[in-house]
Image (cartoon, rainbow, N blue to C red):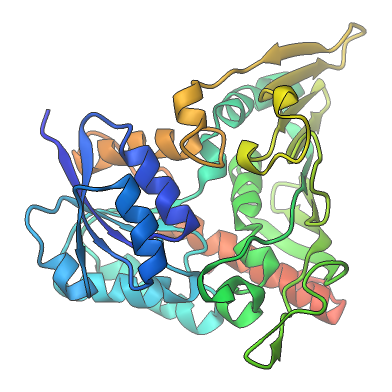
Length: 365
């Protein structure tokens, strides 16, 4: 099988996770990288020693051979970088979330949606964690149709990023966009419906309170609640705490219907685990039928090599496998630009609701 050649834009923490996972694929390799930060480029070189490092996106796009592109630059660069690509080439793209961060960006994304001639896949790693894949596959049967969905994330604070860009809402879009668009995407996917209104409460409670950069105080939130109503009558809730480091499970998803309840629990990144290194929990799928019987606990182990290649329980590897099917014209886009738009719009509505104290209605875009 022909080896697919990747061009990579951005090698921060998430970009390097992509590099590590592409390296595990027998039929793909990173051939060219654009990363303007010298320290990030140095770290990326250790993962992809055979890749050519260039000093501009134009030089990257001129490289041959090149079969597809990965955009993993900071959030506020995504739209600009996608437009730069569209002006020069027509190659399949995997672009990191969030797709965009301001309302002014939406028409630009919609223009790409209408006119770009190759597939664009929005990276939503949480969909592809193996336990989450099993959850998604089983949830309708186990619950008899989901009526209530709760997603909880208890995790560590925002990590340091290049130039501390993620400390400011102007760069990230805000916590509900930067951190939570994954979860809003999962809500739509699991409930198979469009959101109609959102209510939220959030704030900067514990983290980054005394941090200033170039005279500007960090303003990113670190906790909150979001409630979402959907067109099919279902409801969902998100609970986020980013001052809960050391929790046994980082993410917990609970779906309840008339016939039963289904839960999935996922540990956080092992390299950031603050407890005993010999007691790092294994990803676990837990089924709890409503019938009068004991809950059924089903361990869901992940290949250790894949697990060690990132912080998303193997999902980045499996996402790239499916993306490569699209590159080879053997598969379909599973996370479309429309999915990426909805996830950001939901995050924006949550940010606005928490800021104003008002319920925000969501119409189709």
